[in-house]
Image (cartoon, rainbow, N blue to C red; front, side, top):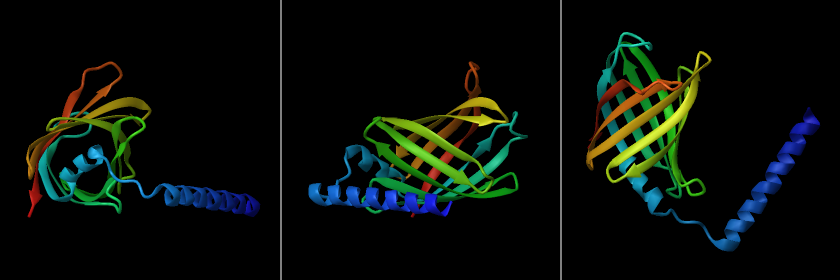
Length: 180
């Protein structure tokens, strides 16, 4: 096992050196216009809304506070969040970026309940749409998160889920506001 980990470290070091030399030869990359659209999310946000009653529980009000900032280089935005839903308190982190290869925005989050999500997204004017697939108790689920910018400091959103070929059902909706 020790030999395997030493080999992995050597390969990682070699790969890192190779990438660093490539960056040095070509110069540091710069974010494109797609990355710059992520600037909208940078800041401190409060989201409030309603969780709809359904298979995930009785529903209720929720509040989410997020602090989002650029990672060095301004290719990705990192957010730290706290969530209060019907007396349950969670913390989480998420990261958003743009994947030039697939020409999609990417989003990953993980929270203190052990839940993880990966989605891809598109932006059309002032509307962002993120879609993903996951398993819930061995059932394949599709998700769709739609955010509509109302201006530089406010947005409405809705989160929908579907199982198999079922139509999407509304799970939650609300409004978010940038804090000054």
